[in-house]
Length: 407
Ligand SMILES: Nc1ncnc2c1ncn2[C@@H]1O[C@H](COP(=O)(O)OP(=O)(O)OP(=O)(O)O)[C@@H](O)[C@H]1O
Image (spheres, rainbow, N blue to C red):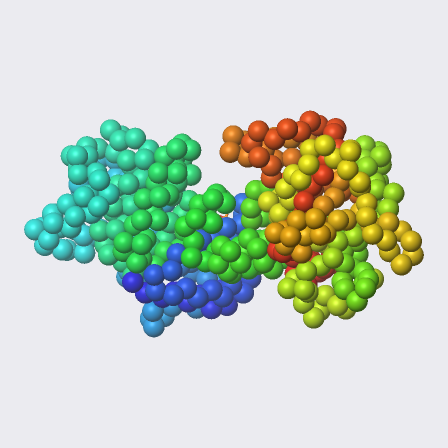
């Protein structure tokens, strides 16, 4: 297995600029997942790595070898396609053996390698069948087998599971993860599936419009997104981006949630300021220069939990601002010593509830702004009711509304 280095890759098709200055390095044994909206250039980048498409400029290196101009067959890279691309008239055995035959590997060695791969993928009993006698999942295994048998320096997987049904996708995802761990293979993998990206990747490259937005571990892209695009793209439901202003109060920075009145939500704009103290660990030196300025406060749905479904019977505000406005916040740790001091309570009205089985997702209005929250599956809430919620700001991410970058 080898490392892969893409340096300043540009790609134009005629006058259309598809990839802009893409530089990515992966270590030996890394599992890089490329994600991004349709048309952002993921497949074009894969094709450049495979040698199926030349870059307009830039360099591709496999280990220490510059392969930018090397023919696909000479690159020692295996690609697994979404369409499987099996030869319909050949048996499974011959399909898997094909890359070895092309390389003129002696017959006995070929047989041994095919058997070894078939055993690994548990398709030994299918070796004499033709592709049309296989299910989608079995075909995909054969396609993976054909890639494995070559023992390449790098594997490329272009949406390999997208033609499979939901259950098979999950099973194959686990198989691919196990395979990666077992072979310590270097892999570049394209997917539209968030869960695939989060569970398989050692690092994720998020692309938009041919530009690399962020390259980071699943934890980093999920918890420390580089900009609002990554924040919204990674994770379901998408990260809440709450229009707020940074204010200083009692020598501490706070977010003040901007009241947004719309025809439907005007009743839920809190009459008082809705202010939460920003935990120390979430304050970058730059954030201090935003005092008095608007920001977008990024908060994940799971950072908000139901505190009390009977919100109407609890006080909605506590404390006071120097200008005598009331603050709609209660620091939870004042009442519960076990709670973190990054936790606050607020009152919100439930606008929408959606159950997926394992979770219930809700939309709650806070100062007229919709907030996605992740709730227990059997939560006792009704649309239109007011409830108390606990908000944990320990993973708060602030964004500049103009540049959209993380502050
Ligand atoms: N051979 C080509 N000639 C001209 N334009 C092309 C060619 N191949 C791709 N494109 C364009 O390049 C852009 C990126 O395409 P690409 O297939 O790389 O995107 P993608 O991110 O893989 O999309 P999807 O997720 O839908 O597969 C698209 O606008 C596409 O129309």
